[in-house]
Image (cartoon, rainbow, N blue to C red; front, side, top):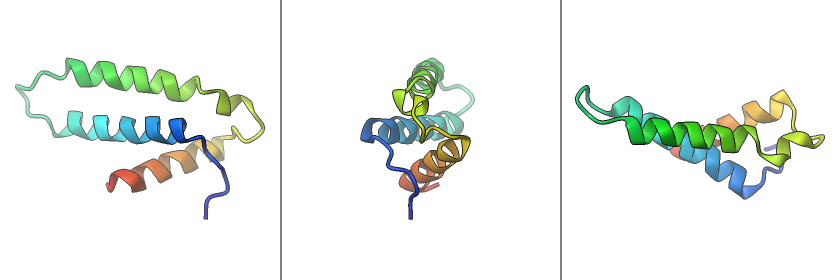
Length: 76
């Protein structure tokens, strides 16, 4: 059971981050990775700068829980 009630946009951003990361990791050696690398940077900034982290629930444990939740959503 989740201890944190994450905003939907934050969960979606973290889930998109993992999907993008795995697309980048699974790409072949000759694939163009620029788009995925830029997307990861944008999502990282969106996640790190989210107002949720400024509140009392924005603890390091919450960050780990968000990552676990997103990994579970992605299925890896």
